[in-house]
Length: 198
Ligand code: URA
Ligand code: SF4
Image (cartoon, rainbow, N blue to C red; front, side):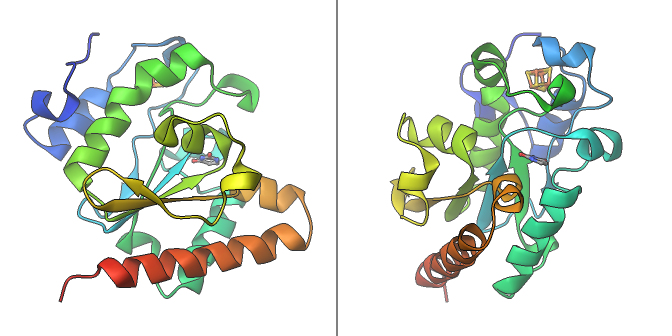
């Protein structure tokens, strides 16, 4: 299936976009996935999270960030006074890479129009990239997450992008990375408040 060059222009609505994505076989990940994991939450959210790709639980349940890393993400969201239903959560690739391997550059590039279209429709004021893959893609950088985390970068039309450590990395590490991530979420909260419209 070929995707339109200007993604949002090619889809009448967010629902139409999701329906097209659900049937997508544009890259090799279609062969091994159980289902496409498009995203979850409020399509009008001010805050958008972008992870890497679905894991085993996400592939089975059809929802991003529902496994162990997802439970940590949920706690971090609740820690700044929000619910999962207040935000939108998606991934760089919408289908699970087999064995949780890293997504390949060709898979990331092929899936990218869906993320771009989600960004266009949702038009969040704050984008949080979770880990290296989302950060490198959306900031178009080769700089690693540990150097970039917790900083605010201008993004799109008046929005801000804040990279944070991937919750799976936080779970693998100890102590400091959880404290850093909690602090970065406070930065996210502040950025949301600064952009809140009366
Ligand atoms: N890790 C991710 O990057 N995304 C998910 O949806 C789950 C785990
Ligand atoms: Fe399509 Fe993206 Fe799934 Fe590849 S990962 S099949 S591009 S939805």
